[in-house]
Image (cartoon, helix red, strand yellow):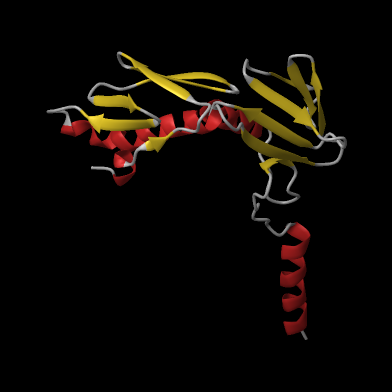
Length: 192
């Protein structure tokens, strides 16, 4: 059984939670979230604590036990403090801007790339238009949107141009000139 799943979830003062059948509802200062529990997993709210348990005879659901607890804990954290992902756009002429309810990015294609901003998500660019910040109370939605945007133009290994997470290290490859310079010098020195 999961050690993470056994841990109780403590709720801050301004957060309220309730269980309706198979659905856990969490409400806080920043909004409301809901999560449907899989069969065999139960949740109970007592005072300011949420406890997750495996139903009798459903020991095969142990793999989902810790996952359910983590998802509900992320909901409690999200309604009190927003989750954030930061993406960096690197490349000559690569930039982006927020236009109403979508973002427009110039990424070296023949056309601008347009991405709709989902409900409950806030997106903004820095003044240089190269750093995109994605915020929201639903951790899964924020992470999925960041991954979807990153997939549009993955960083390439030679110049490092593309979209990457802030702080992500891209392993760079030596180009043809660097590889050819070493081989040419060695070959020329051996000749008489």
